[in-house]
Length: 130
Image (cartoon, rainbow, N blue to C red; front, side, top):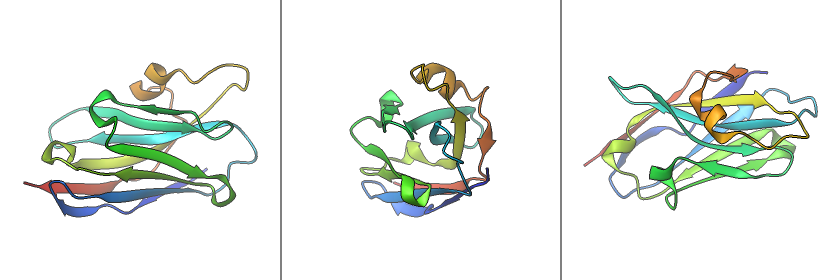
């Protein structure tokens, strides 16, 4: 599975961007697909994910109410709509996919740790100016 991100850029504080993550193929498997970010000089953090089989969504507390994740399974694409952007949202945003066991719920804490991600994209930069 290859993940390709797009949609990053420069925006003023309070503005919006929409990131896209296109997957090469999912072969009908169940994945949690989401976004991580890494700001300069900081560690990676999980921002959000969505489960492909039931569209359940998960968010980092600091982005709740501002970011919305969605998916179009017909296009194998996941979107991250980011509104009311803040300078602290500045980072490289990476798409990530973790295959799921169909009988178990997504473990959001496990996903956002990043340690069990099966596939990573190369990242797209987001810069929010104050």
